[in-house]
Each structure stands twice: as structure tokens, then as C-alpha cells.
Image (cartoon, rainbow, N blue to C red; front, side):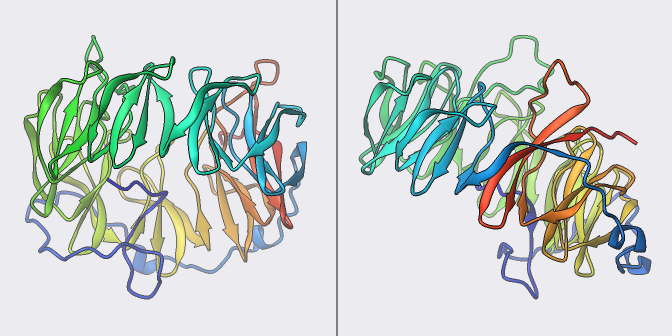
Length: 382
């Protein structure tokens, strides 16, 4: 299952996913946003905003960057990747063709087309020997050897031998209401998807045409050409009836019918009917949607609460979201007010890290010209 930053369909633009059409099901139960009446012109307050209320904690000097994980971040310096600490000091020299984020004390690296793992001292903990490697999760890492996928432990030994045609990492459903949470991984065997436990045994037998990870005790699955959801026992809880779906987030999940995106609740009924060519999952109670060529935000009742006026938009995190105006990125709060005026050539969503000494500050990475750096910015939950 491919997961993108936004769920998209296209008529006029080349960014979107081509999916076959289906008649809209008869059980739509929500109020459609009155987007036809929305004024999409950019407000004067946004045009005139000069807010520069941020601080560079690491100056733009890297070819490419990623988020901090376990206090280190992979960055490209020239054509090689290494790791920096939160002050911007190079901790692990840029000697890798590619490098991942640290997880459970290890990070995958690529050297000369082979993947292995380094520790925080930059030493190879697991030699470069795999054709693809993923982050460690629940003590295991998904790797590909030849044309099969398996799972290794932190000693680099196969805990689950390479046998799958495709697979995803183990993950704990953090939004699960089940007391004893289990880690399951979707795997593909013989052109069918099922779910295994950490012993490599099938908890849910391969039977689906596609599958995704569990979230809020449900996982998206595909039967023939339609998507639905199963529970942790593998039973269908939402019948396959949608063209495309995403995982549940904050009680709702993106689902598409008739080449339009809407939002379903845990019973499979549309709480916000399919109205959008492009939309994102809910985060901080808001979701970005594309209306008449611009991005705005809706609430869980499907009401437009920040009018469409942006050329692009990110997800809300800690009360802030990145937005693009005339090819520059800045940040808004939940009222749509500019917190950092658009001035960056690229920008990330807010990072999850917060310094305990400065709980009202967040961090993000931004691009100025052709270099990337990191900023701190004030949290604003208005």
C-alpha cells in the first residue's frame, strides 16, 4: 500500500493518482462543505505579513536534511551523507551514499549499493550486505536479500528468514484500545497479503490483494479492486467498497469513490462525503483540502475553517502547519493566521521534538536557496 503526503486525484494536474471510478454509495451521511461559495483570493493580511518570528538553530548549509531521531539527523554534505547533532556539529562523517534515521540505536546506511546498519558512533554494527534495509521497529528490521524480504535482529541475524515477495515493518498501533497490544506486519506471499507476528507465524492468513498497517485497531485491505478494513482478528469490519483508502487518524479515514475523496467513520459511513480531488488525513482536528485550485482546511464536520488560499499546504502539528504562497513557504496557526511569513524555498512539517527547557518552541527544517538548515519557531495554539 503506497502512502503519500496527500491523497490525490487529477483532472488538470499531473500530481495525482489514477484510479477507476465507482458510483457513490447511497449511505453518505454528512454535510458537504459549501466550497463553491468560497473566495479563493489571497487575503491582504497574508500578502502583507512580514512575520519573521523564528531563529536558525542550524544555519542553511546542507545539500539535504531529514528529521532528528535519537538526537541525530542524517544530512547530505555534498554528495555523501553523514549525521549531525542538534547544534549542527558533524558527529558521523559523510561517507555514505545514503543514510536513514536512527531507530532503537541503529540506522540503516547504503555503501556501494548495499545496505547495513551503523551505531551512534558511526561504526558498522551490521555489515553492508542487504539489497534494501528499513528502520528497526519492535526489535526487528525489514530487509531484502535477493528478491525476498525477511526480518533481522540487532545482531544482524535473520529472526524471520527471507521468504516474502513484499513486506512492511512491524508496528505497534499506538491508537489501539486493546490492552495487550501486539505487533503485526503486513506481508505478501504468493501474490496475497496477510499479517505475521514477531515469531514469523501468520496471525492473519494471506488472502488480500493489498494491505496496510493497523491503526485504531483497523487495517486497510484490498479485495479484488475494492478497499475495506479488517480488525486484529482478520475479520471484515468495513466491507470492501472504496476505490482507495488511508489508515484511520483521529477517528476518521480518507476514502474515495467516484474519483473524489471524503472521510469515513469507524462504521464505514461517510462523515464528510467525497467532494475533493485532493485531501490529507486529519491532524490536530483539521485536514487540508484542495478546492478550486487552492488549499484550505476543514474541520471534522466538513466545514471550511481556513479558506482555500494557499498554493500548497502541510498537516497541522502542535497547532501549526506549513503553507506555500507564491512559491515560498511559511507557517500558519489554526486560525489561519501567519506565524512565520512565507520566505523559505522549501519547509517541513513541524518536528515532534521539543526541548524541555523551551516547551513553547517547535522545530522544522527549511531550505534557503539551495541549502537546508533548521529553525525553531514559537508554538501558537490560537
